[in-house]
Image 1: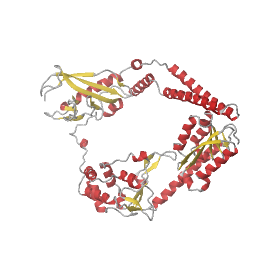
Image 2: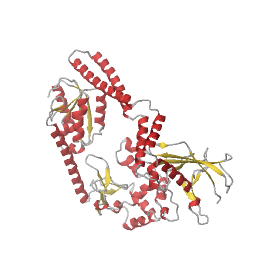
Image 3: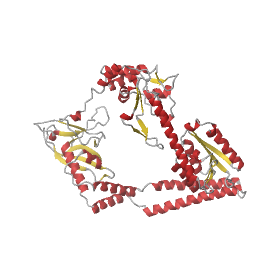
Image 4: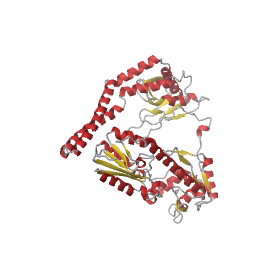
Length: 556
């Protein structure tokens, strides 16, 4: 497996936490020694090594690997060497892609020493090697799950200690009260049992300067990355307090297995049904007794009511959709009852009328029934459009966006850029070969490669721009999506919440403007007015300029 054609190479070394327990054979030191010996025997100049220590082979989102790809794109080397294929990765599909497609397409040779794999030669056994590496990955995952399940069943705590606890110094699989935070947990339960709300408890903890759970872990207990530490809040909130109050771990019980990974290759987790949770009682010292815990549960949420459950409460379909055109705040449902009439005196109103701001809102208000009917009619006018009318509307929108750049021109530009990039890669490879054979001196090599890399970078930037659809194409696609959705709806006799949020993204309500130009009139005055109602639809935005509703307030 000689490789005299390339002289500049990168070494890639990887070791997962599970493999680190297997001894020296897979260690980073051992991998480094094997790669260095190979380079010495084959007259290869090892430019740089990239290390991912503690990273699984099932995930290619590794810092060292990504940095190596970045350096390869810049033409810093034409050879990548690993101890074996499993160091590149154990995901069969991803590892095969990089080894047999990504590297060769870019003129980069890849060598896996122990597996006798070299992209310069035929690798008949490669599919079996990739498959066996994935089998190892899946088998390792199964073994880890078995170990965790056995630990859970025996009452061992194999997760991050919750707030109020730490790992026992004599037994790392057992929880012990944290002297600094256990009193805070007890305080929270006593306050909740006495009838205080979660919000009030959180405000009092903030007033007393108590450090919240995640911030405490960042400062005093666990090692966090800079990005992870930035997520820690300096204040308590009622959600954190509720989470503590609902957790039976403070009764001395171990509760694990509430979530699981979607698959061996994914980090995403999904909730596990409560019946499948692993619960083991009396595994560690409790921080509260059963009586205090139960009293806190009884008072939890006692002050909260779901007012929407009451029949007399008006239930608006425009929540989060109808907003004030001036201040942008959502309109609130409000109104009164007069002579038994409810719908007639139901309004959506902006309550953001602060007096302590430079430009306070002017109190936008619209009758609820009027807005429902206006939106229903406007939406029905769109649903009633024929296919030809919808296409005409889309073409007009594309014309307004300015479709001066023809799609064929963009495609031709893309193909030419890709072809030139491939040609540059081959030229650079040839230049390094000529340099190794003494046909090209180092100074001239550096200048030529630098110029070619600069040109290649510019072409790649052009390709990135071409990847995104043109504004005209985006507009055409958006209109196609909207009217494809509209085809599944018939004429709307009644507008409900589901239909509204399916089609409408936002509705902006402007203030009333009366005939004399004023925006306010004496109370109970019956004067005509104009009011702007702008409807922004999903995918396509606003189809027309301000819609104006002309009406007159009826005296209450």
